[in-house]
Image 1 (cartoon, rainbow, N blue to C red):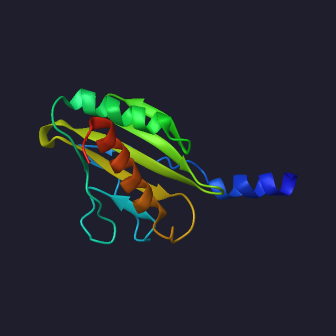
Image 2: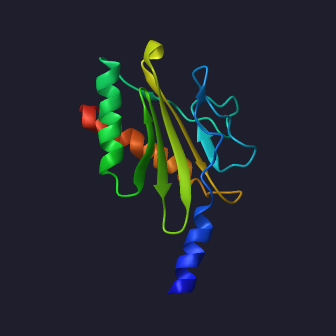
Length: 141
C-alpha cells in the first residue's frame, strides 16, 4: 500500500510556478500534445473558450459552482475573474485555469498535464465536459 501511495504522489508532479495571467493572457501551451488553451494559436492545442450571455460575474460564479461540484476538481487559487484548479484522474494531476474576458463575453480556458508527453486527449475531453456542465447550469443545450 505504501508503494502505491508513493507511486501516486510521484505521478502528481510539482505544481507549476509559471501559471497565471499576464496582460489578459494565459501561459502558452508547451509543444507537447497534453495541453489545451482557448488562447492557443495552433489547432493542436486550441479549444473554444466558454461563452456566456448576460452578467459576466454571474457567469463566472456559475462556472465556480460547476467546478466545486465536480469530484475531480479542487480550486487552488482564486482572484477576481481568475480561477486555478487541480484536476485529478486516478494517478495524475492536471492544472486548469479559467480567466474571465468581460469584453468578449467569454471565459478563457487552459488545461495541461503536469507530467508526461501525451494525455490521450484527457485535458480536451475534460474541458468539453466542463463546457457542457457550464451551459447546462445556465439552461442551454
